Image 1 (spheres, one colour):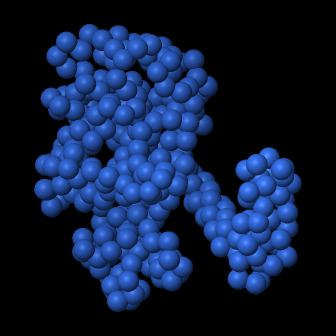
Image 2 (spheres, one colour):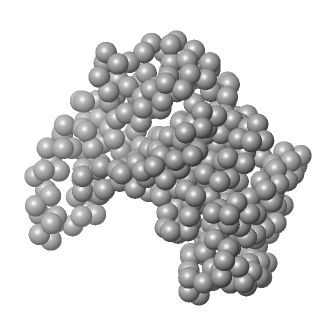
Length: 334
């Protein structure tokens, strides 16, 4: 981001609070920037908008590639818009491990929703984030809330062991599944099923209706084997067809039921408090790692020892400790 394109802290805050979509987009671009000057500016912006956030229902949507996440979000989102909600979709696209590039194609996959001015869709690259979510997704979510969006949908890259990181930033964790794609109970890692608040079998249409019903019964039986959730919520299994727009109303009613119950028993706020604490700890780790990797002495020494590490001459563990000790000694030399 070039310096001339930056706004003042006050302009960012004022624009976001007014719901100015252009300023909101620029603010999200700011928090996604890796430049130190942008990060420092973004921190001030976030402090300014934070008191106006937190009033939405935050929903994470994950599932195996091809399960129809984008189609589900488009159909589901249009229903929410018709109900009068102000929707924001944070869609995380995979980044190339080689080039760092990202397709950012969610807007083309959600053509109708993208064209609706009542919805705000922001595709962001996953980058090096392990959780299948952008490293700045939390900040983007808070900015969208401050801009008046009362439903936030976060679509993750796919599903896998690290995808459950999205659970740490949302209120409701929704797992989309397919029927008839093999052994239903072995098709996804146990940890993700255990953490979801609802499991929805998508594409329950045409010849797949009966298979979806069978899968629903199997998953419902499997969920009973998991320990009870701390929240007291009992995960539900439903079927839907995002293409035919069936089952989506029931899905929303379930989420509202969840929000009402979790608000009443205090778990919703408790969970968000825990998420805020974890958010700070994660950012501390990020800042330390970033400072470590950019330390001149560390960079120089790393360049010297990497050939030996690659050839097997040096112990990676021993040299890692040497680099950390070097960083701690010279941490004021940046």
